[in-house]
Length: 283
Image (tube, rainbow, N blue to C red):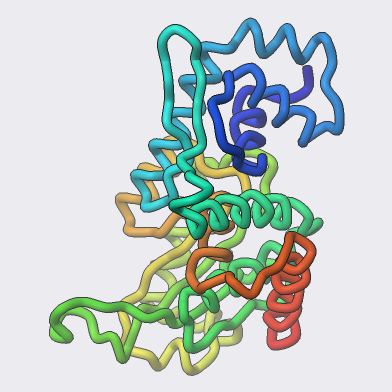
């Protein structure tokens, strides 16, 4: 068994939603097959042994995502069967079903990005999807921990608090790691943010004038493929950074605008690659 419980749980969110109730065993084995192309007796034994833990992990992962503003996915039937149900209704909530389907495919699409540089372009694409008026991707190499810069809209009921015209300046870092981001990576990013606030001279070559001269508030944003260790999350939240993982990124890709024009997964793939290449072309 090469996959961990965490791998299986994340794999479940890559499955296409379906109507009906499903046991945690069947969902887990479907996720393993989606990830590996097949299942084995060893996989079945692993899932049977950890069925309760997998059910609990799935619910915690789902609730944490909802707590950060994400799309709810499952309802849970704990006793005695450990079954779940996608929160969909074919007849009454077609748009929600479409979002869940597109999100599943968008997660797979992000998995196909192949290298760190594409994941940096993804950070810029997310900012565009959020309405950024300016986006800049730093050149390859060690750029003081800065992968992308953007100015995104910000809104409040009073323009005295945050001016929607100025927006918010985003300093972004993309981590295409296979493991969760550790606390020390956030601490290094904190040091980078301090250097930007203090206008360190060595940063002027990589930070464009439109960003340096803007008076909008400054915020950090992490995009991490495999999420964050608990210490990293606590440190980031204490310093006011926005934390996105692949599932959150997939929802931004497909939920910000109406997707009625997308006919199928191949159509969505072409659209996302076209938008990513546009970010790359302007980098």
